[in-house]
Image (tube, rainbow, N blue to C red; front, top):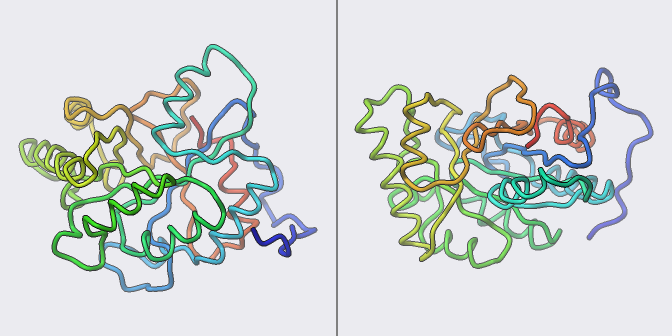
Amino acid sequence: MNTEWTLPFRVPHRTWWWPRLPKERAAVCMLHSVGNDLSLPDCPPNNAIEPENLRRVIELLHRADYAFTTFGAAFADEQGRRQTEGGPRRICLTFDDGFVDNYTNLLPILREMGVPATVFSTNRGERDAHFLSAEQLRTLDRSGLVEIGGHTANHCCLLHADKPTARREIVTNKQWLESVLEHPIVSFAYPRGEYDAEIVRFVQEAGYKCAATMEKRQRKPPVDAFHVHRQILPRGKTPYELYLLATREKYRI
């Protein structure tokens, strides 16, 4: 790991007072693309984090003694940890949509830094080279660093689809991913963070154990397994600003 990059001496304006993550909690962060291609489909430029900034914020989190985990493991761990306190602060990096740069750019960073992450993938890589192919998904999965989760077959806006279509999008995505990976998957992310009670039921009935959204309102622990909100880490921030965002108390399990 590169140890030459150092913490700044000055805290960015309006961020020093933000509450930090309690030691017994796990923070969950949301990202998308890792790269400098700002023309990806369904990916606003703000959602494409610079690879070097991602590497540096991971380094900052390492130095602050955060333990990295996957989304499914973070929530499974929390189920047991609610009976006890203590342990390291934990953080989970999640990447939505399954862009191909999660294979070309993200995986090398995870290997270099020795940290796990979760990628929520659609089925679009079957026909669109901007997204992860079956072989790339298998490579990520078999790296031992990446948990693959579901994200609907076609990045469907579930609240705008009729209910049979919404259910089909959830189920066929899970079936395809499990056929590719040859094992069950347990984590899901609602596209655009949109859902209602019936969508949650479809996700549960499909066999998922937890699901991530992007709600901005705070939920105090214990957090419902199917309403796990995340802190967005956007493009254009400094590594230290990203660190402060990632460790906000507001977004945690």
